[in-house]
Length: 167
Image 1 (cartoon, rainbow, N blue to C red):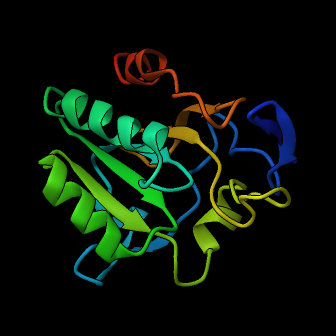
Image 2 (image 1 turned 120 degrees about the horizontal axis):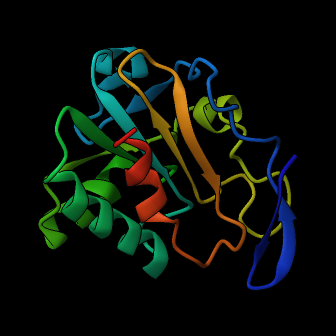
């Protein structure tokens, strides 16, 4: 399990992120229109997984805004913003914020994404929401970058994630 903090208090995830060079675990998540999407649907594109507890928090919302801005300039790259928020809340946020360059996906149905990527909190006040993390997957479905954000209230390292796409 990974140890992270929430406002300085230690909490844990159910495991650690996939290793760089490994095949990214397949997943099924729910889109805002309630349809289902899989990682394999994006085969041939580079994929940034922006994972967070809830879009209804300032830090999570900022990560969506930041990746939305950055994604507009990336070739052959899709940014998937993933939480357990209901698709209706995700759609409301995107509509209010003018978010158009990322896809919001929900793990609300069965939590299998959180289990497959080991990002579900196992204890603490946010269990079983998803911890803040970034995973970058290349066109062949291999993990090329991961970041488990150490303090849940802090933003991910956007620059490092985007630089992984340049290699």
